[in-house]
Image (cartoon, rainbow, N blue to C red; front, side):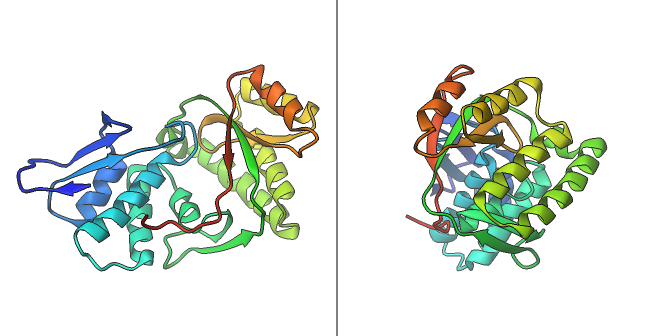
Length: 246
């Protein structure tokens, strides 16, 4: 990130390509009147439900705080990125989860000052992902019918999860949520069922046309084979580290 009086407007790139970056631009506008250059790199598929907009917004807020000596606390930095996501309807809870890392449970919604989180203790775990395409978050969370179904199914899923807060319960609740809200298209359902037939567990990334899955070591190859029938799976690992500067 660079700041310069020679710039006429903020310039944002993602993986080397110029982008509008509306959420990131909002973060910049909230923290400074200076035009800046923001160069972001993402090693995850963009627009597929993996929270890239929230991650870029959060990292931009941390970088601006450092570069401009704003002396903000982490809570304020996280709140800025969260508010930018809400304003642009690019996400509602990604920033909070990304701020803490691990398997975060949002027990109370809202920015850090208001929202509350808990965690499911989980050892380093491999997550297999199959990105299929983009799904516009704004189009979903702006649809009253979807919002009603998401709220209704979300409350039920939260109750079940808190009764038995394990990663396996989370996966089952996530699957039921994807199917119950109608967000899972037929191809997503086919992949989930294929993974389950191979001995794994799977659900849909929210919000995106992507599937994520887990499998124990004995079933890993079978689950990868099942995913490969539909595309090229990717492998990531859960990270329980808090967001911060490198």
